[in-house]
Image (cartoon, rainbow, N blue to C red):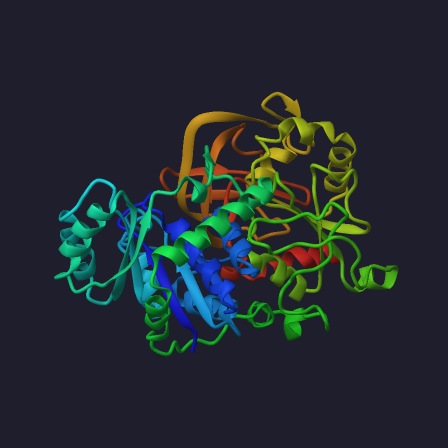
Length: 492
C-alpha cells in the first residue's frame, strides 16, 4: 500500500515538471521517502526527480513495456517508500499516435488506481478555467481527478476569480503558484537541459521549486489525497525474476549484487540521467577471478551520455555482469577488464569537440569493437561510433557520418530485429522510441539492426560483428532476453 499521486495537465507546457519535482522535494524535505516516476520514454525529467528525492527516477511506459508491467515496475520503484509521485506526459489523455489511450497519463493513472492532480496554466484565463477542469474531470469516469493546482497566476485578484469559478466544479483547488523565474529550467533542441550538465544550477532550481510548492500548495490535502488511493494488487518487478522468465537458470543473479544495480565507476564520477549507474572508483570482484565470474560491462555516462533507464543496470547486474560507469568526456581509457560496452542516449552533438579530442578513448572503443566484443549503442551511442559527427572525428567503428538537422524525429516504433546480434536474434519483435534532431548517412548498414513499421516502413541501424548501433531507444524490462543475451556474449 503506497500513497500515490499522478501529476497531469491539459497540455504540455503547463508546468508539470516544476510542480511534480517541487512536490517530490517538498515531501522529501519533510522526511518522507518519496518514489519518483515519469510516464513515457522521457529520460531528462527523471534526472530532476532523482535530484529531488535521492532515489532513481523511473519511467512507466505502457507502450514500450506493455500495460501488464506498469504496476509491477511502479511497485518495484516504490518499495519501502511513504509516497510516490508520478509525473505525466503531454496532456492527460494524450498517448501513442493512433493507439487510443495507450501510453497516456490517464491510462497509467488507471493502471495504478491513483488520483490525479491537474496542473492548469491559468495565465490567460479566468472563469473559463472551470469549464476546462470540468471537461477533463468528466471525460473518463475511471480517471479520478482529485484536485487542481493553478500555475502562473498573476495577482491576488486573478487568484480570486479562478477560485470563485472553480468553487462549483467539485474539484478542489490544492495549490496556487505565481510566476517565478527562479524555478525555471533552461531548454534546448530536445527539451530540458539534463541535470548532469548543470548540476549546481539544477540543485538551486529544485530547491526553488520545493520552496514555491511549500508556499503555494496545501501539502496536507495533497498527502491526504495520495493516501486515499486504494490498494494496488501488483507483485513488484525484479530483475532476477524477469531473467528467470527469460530462461536464465536461477535468474543468473550474482550473490551480493544487490537489487539497485548501482555499482562501481571511474574517478570521473560518471552519472546517467536517471541515476541508474553512478560511482567513483573501486568495486568488488574486479580481480581476475571476479572478472571471469562477472564480466565487466562499461556503461557510458557523464554530461554527454545522460539517457539510461534504471532497470538496464539492474538487469545487467542480475544477469551476472559487473556494471562500471565511465565518462567519455574525461576518461582516457575504458574500465579495466571491459568485456562489453553500452553507450546510451544523450547529447554528443553538444560535446562533439571534447569527445573528438579524447582520441585515446576513441581508439580504445574502436579496438574493443574490432575485437568482436558486444557493443550496444542507442542514439547518442550511434553517433559516437560513427566516422564523424558534424565534421569532427568520432570512433570510426561505423562507415557512416552524422550531423545535426533541423528536423525532429520523434515517436514510438514497432520494430523487428533484421539480423542476429549480441542484443537479439533475427525476428525478435519489440517496441521502442525515436527522439533526435540528427541524421546519419547512410541510415542503415549492409546488415541493418531493425526493421520499423511506422510512420513508414524502413530498415535502420547497423550490426557489425559484435556491434549493434541504432537510433531506437528500447526498454529492456520489456524483453529481458536482451540483457541476458548481451551478458552471455560478454562471457564468450
